Amino acid sequence: MTFNATSLSIERLKRTTLVERFGLRATPNVVRRVFVTEEVRAFLDTKEPYFPRTTAELTFGRFRSGHMVTVSGAMDKRADFKRMVDTDEVWIMAFRKPKLGQGRLLGRFVDRNIFVGTVIASREEIAKVSYAAVAARVIDTWDEVTGGIPPMRSNNFEDYFGPQHIDLDNDYD
Image (tube, rainbow, N blue to C red; front, side, top):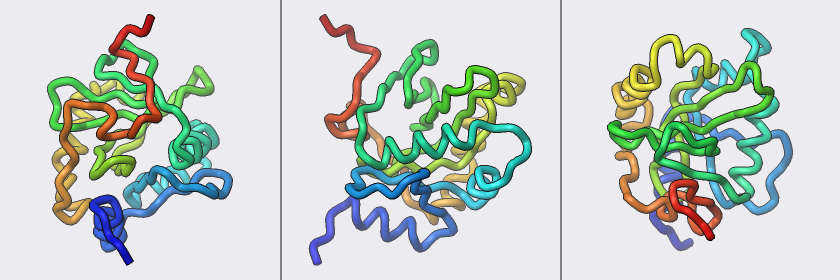
């Protein structure tokens, strides 16, 4: 069996308490992976409080299948994934539907196409305390949650998503 950095990252994640999310349907060709904390899993698997759980699971499935995602480093863009500015590699995965009650999963990448979500909340809940405060929770608990796996660091979105992304920060003519 041949190992690469991605498969080694997945094996390391499987030795933690993190749980892989698969989406609503079976994904025949898995391109990307999403792991979440037990707290996030429990939140997604319950009915209350209100949260766009179906939208979240559909988003996980699209991401896992390698569908095109929109990406930005600007908070004012409507991207599927936003890399937060002035934080140490914290990303936001957005669940945008329905318009009322939109959700956010914050976390980090450990390798290309491997996202680890550690904090989940509605957009309204985050607005009450600030994205920076929620990002600090991601950073503060990272080593404990991942067993010390360092977050991926790069200035190039393709390093995180491969070629299946649209960079909303660059103008396309």
